[in-house]
Each structure stands twice: as C-alpha cells, then as structure tokens.
Amino acid sequence: MKRLLAVLVCSFCGLPCVAQNIALQIQAMKSSYASSGVIDVLDNGAIVIEPKMPSPLCALPLNKDGKTTWSYYAFPLASIVVPFAAVDETLISEDLVFTNPDAAKGYKPGDLGDTTMVVVASVPGKQFHTMSYDREKLASLGPGPHSSSEYGQHPDDTEAFGLTFSNPADARAFEIALKDAVILAKTQSRP
Image (cartoon, rainbow, N blue to C red; front, side):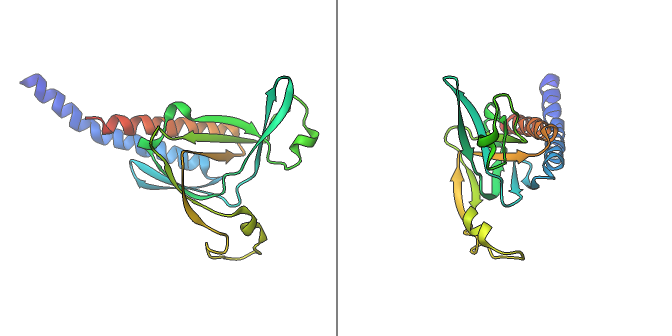
C-alpha cells in the first residue's frame, strides 16, 4: 500500500514538472523562431506558428545520377496550428536551401544554401490546420495594412510544413525544443 501511495504521489507531483518543461521548450522555440515569425501558445499541448509573410521560395539542389536537379518549395502559410500529439518527432528534418531565385544558374556542386529549412511532418492520420495565402496576390499588394481576403487567405490542412531560419543555430535550437516538447506532451498524455 505504501508503495502504491508513493507511486501515486510521484505521478501527481511529476505532472506540473512535465507542464513546466513543455513551457520551457515552447519558450526556446519562441526565442529561436523570433527572427522568422511568431509563436503563440494555445495550451501546453499546441502552439500556433505565424511565419513572416511572404515566405521565401526555397530551392534545394539534389544529386540524381551524377546530375544536379532542383526541388522548389513554397510554404505560403499565414499560420499553422501545431498540436504536439500530431507531430512525428522522428520525421523532423532540416536542409540547407537557397532563397535566391537564380540559385540554379550560378550553383556549383558543394555550394551551401543561405537558409535552413526545417520540415515538420505529422503522424499518420493527423494533419496540421493552416491558413494559407496566395503568393501572387500578396506580391501585387502595395504597402500598408490589407485584409486577408485581399491576399487570398484561406483555411487548408497539410501533413507537413516547412519553416525557414536564416541562422542554422536557431534552426537546430528550434528542432531540439520541438522534439522535446512533442516527447514530453506524448508522455504526459499516456495513462
């Protein structure tokens, strides 16, 4: 009976500690992402990421059969709701990408990109709720405040998204904090 009581006390005492650790991880994500956008907390189980707009067009060189080919990514996201339970922490990855639209013209094998793109994927059967926008509409707007309808903002769901960081150390700090928060949240939700 004493052992059962001790286990229960430790379990209940550990809950605030887990929540506090998630809060620390969220703060680390906010700090590391500050130059790229804003992160708000929905609760200890989810965050909202609001990247600066417009997001860059990212070019990633790939070597296929000894030839360089290019993949291009644009993540026109105004916001992403990220429930930690929906993130597959084993699939968080990063790539060095080029944000110069003419990168392919002057590229030499071995050149490194100027920006780190962190890709976050969901667990099977889950999606992230996003607010996307039309890059062309946003680019055609002049300076000043605009309504979301003017740049074609609309809800969308996605299984993966990318975030860009100009500083590789910030990207790695974000990745580590996100992985830790996901693991802590999943541990907390287990019975």
